[in-house]
Amino acid sequence: MNRTFLPLLFLLMGCSGCCRDDKAADNRSIVVIYDNDVHCAIDAYPKYAGYRDAITAADTSYVLTVSCGDYLQGGMAGLFSQGEFPLEIVNSVGYDAVTVGNHEFDYRIPRFRELTAGINAPVVCVNLTETDGTRLFRPYVIKRCGSRSIAFVGVLTPVAIEAESYAFIGDDGNLLLELNEDNIIPMVQNAVDDARREGADYVVVLSHLGEMKPSVTSRDLIAATRGIDVLLDGHSHSTFAQETVMNMDGKPVITSQTGTGFVNLGKLIIRPDGRISTELVPIETINETSEKVSHTVDSVKALYEELAQQKIGTCEKTLTIYDDDGTRIVRNRECSMGNFVADAYRAVCNAQIAFVNGGGVRTVLKAGDVTFQDIIDIQPFGNTIVLVRCKGSGIVSMLEKCSASYPDEDGSFSQVSGMRYTIDSGHGNKVTDVQVLDPRTGQYTPMLPDAIYTVAASDYSISLFEEQLGGTEYLNAAVMTDYEACIKYISEILHGTVGAGFADLQGRITIR
Image 1 (cartoon, helix red, strand yellow):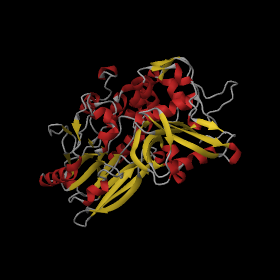
Image 2 (cartoon, one colour):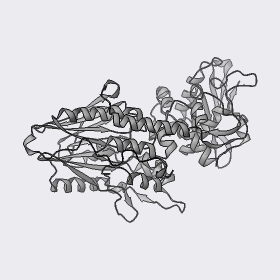
Image 3 (cartoon, helix red, strand yellow):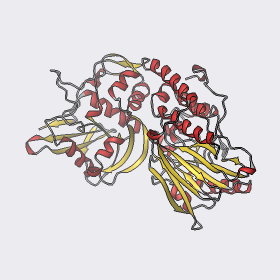
Image 4 (cartoon, helix red, strand yellow):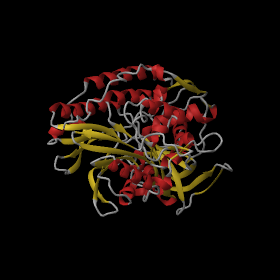
């Protein structure tokens, strides 16, 4: 979407939380308000800014506002505007420093460059470079608070290249940008050392690394470096107010992560005597609100509600959650709508198999024009799609769990893609004949108990069947929301046409 589509609300307004150069006031604490993985939870921004502004108005602390990434994608505001609407809100809040998350690339590299150029705050990232090694952003920024200085160093997970490969890899198969996985630790260390030499009293890393192997994690980074005081983290959607990791000199480094979707904001406090602590403040407990940010959010919501009626494609034949006599079957039998949603998850994640709980598929897709609103009505919950690895035996256990209530309805009943299975209703609903599709041959082969399969599903479903799946390894903590996956499937992979063949059942679930 062209940036001129939406007037740049408050684009030139500065940050209300900037530090003052007042050496006589060093009895003040430094307070850093931070977030991570907001994913377009835009209704919380007025409280976030209001909380920050209330501390500023009290005039007892220097106040800064920072973000650890993943703020331009994840909800309707980002989806409908290709990141423009959340950018306007971020600018109305007024940040002192931000880094980028892997989902800032969801709209592809040209759009990424355009959006980040419009952020009215220093963008910091040590390891994101052009293919010739030139950095896209500064590695750090230093903010002055009275006679003290605090440096913010940014770092992005190299998993982004794999998770958002469609953005990072050009049509010729070559990388468009580099994330320098093998050099992340020395690059961060060099930035920390440079910031210290420039006079930084404190170094805070704005990390979008998270806690997921096999790539470099935030804890790996702390353990292999020195000179970092605090690491504010993101990417893995973890929630912890304060933990301590020892650096390479055996000194403690505080780390914190707020979760996702603005359930919490983070608050870092550096007291006048140098003591440092972090805490989480639940958004629901905050009463303060920024009128300026509220106005921006209201304006954005009014615009995307209009966009919800825009056409994204055409459906040639109705996909349904009912059988021929009108009985709902999405929660106890195979249906065309369930197949389609599972297909979307599998395709956009490039997974071997996918499943979706029947309770999350709410209505039909009628033949004719398909709008954004049609897809949101089908998948209204905004659950996050994740890509995981798990054993065949765990998948079978999961299928038996969600089929146990047959023939009664069960919202956890799994519609699937890339696989098929049989429910033996005469033997306690035992699941048998579980097979996996080979996309190269179009043939199904038996699922092997000890084999590892890549699975796309909602984070809700994975957590629901955590005990059955057992030992799940996350390849990506968040791909996109459920309705975004369906929209992407229609508009990009199917090129706007849902063919009539999708209305036919595929024999994926057999009842014996």
